[in-house]
Amino acid sequence: MGKPAEIKRKRGQHGPLKHGGYSLLVTGKLPAGRDHVGKYLTAVRAGFVQDLGGAAGMTTPEVVMLDRLITALGIVRLIEEYVKEKGVIDKPQGFLNPALSKGYISYCNQVRLATQMLEGWVKERAKTRQGEGLLTAEQLGAKIVTEFEAQEAARASQGNADNAPEGDNPTTEGDNND
Image (tube, rainbow, N blue to C red):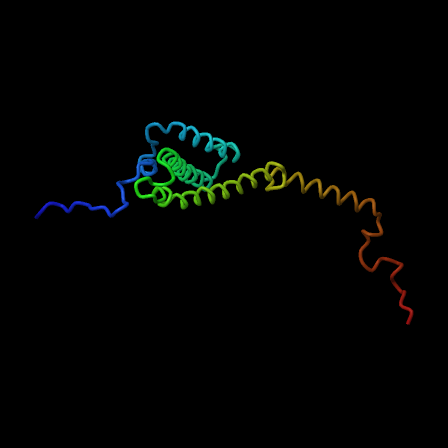
């Protein structure tokens, strides 16, 4: 067998992009010199965890969605940093920087959708904390007792006429004027 064929690039194609998004996906680590991106992602995660009531109170879907958001947001930020350094237009050919044309919009959309979903969950948690959401068993029991007592008090104040069995009301019996 002969040598493996050399890869020949078409005009305008360059080597692999070096923005670091792939490294983040594979290793979970940011490239050197991108510590500020890591701090930003940590702050975003901490903010959402706090908004969702703390790590102990988060559901599994919330944790998964937050992880996906942070990963996609990390890739978006790495691409943006790369483009800030290299420019929006690829200088040799005059084309849009390939980092912007290969997946950037898709990752931005993932960030948007995950943020909207998490924001919805945050709003639902806020409603629950304000008493507009689900009640605990203790709260529900207290509410039922309070409502029952209020109904009993209303019945007692109406008098015995409303509590009499049907047919015992003297005003309606024998009023047939045929």
